[in-house]
Length: 192
Image (cartoon, rainbow, N blue to C red; front, side, top):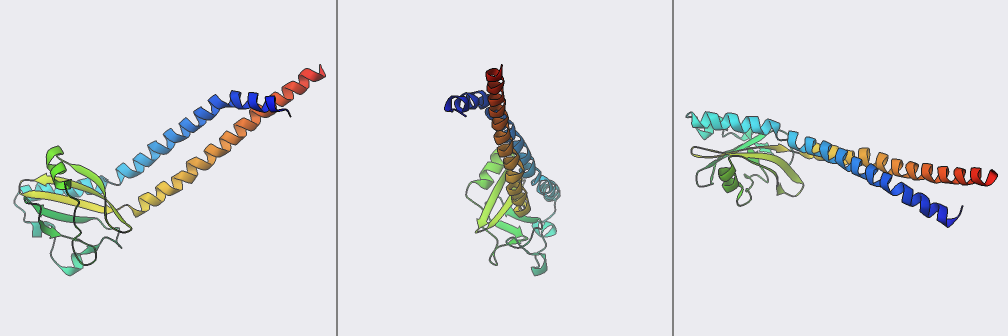
């Protein structure tokens, strides 16, 4: 096998490699975005229901019971949680705790919710704690509904292998097929 045959094979393979990588990237991005965006679905429903109840006269304590057994340690639990804020951004009621207190929301999250009507973000209130949260404004403040995305991120990690391994295998096999075809073609040309 000479060097020119390998180079010619690589040049012929390059458009296929670009297509294989492009298709793999599109599959990865479509599935990853579906995983992540669907992680918001329960929180959207919880936040909309809480906002409707609050706008219809419910108190924060009606929405979020203030009892120790209703508290959710968001570093451990996968359960959805709710935090209600007053119009000044102070916590009015919370079912979420982290290190025995309501975790602090990053600056600007409530303002963005007020400006856009709904703020959907990934929140990292502590080391190793990541949650998909939905923040909605209501007449007297804000509703935050969230839940851990630990298993969503595990699915995303698995997706790397589910798309990456077939992508690399297809790249190698397609190059090998082009190289083998060129080598066989040269042998046939020499034999004739």
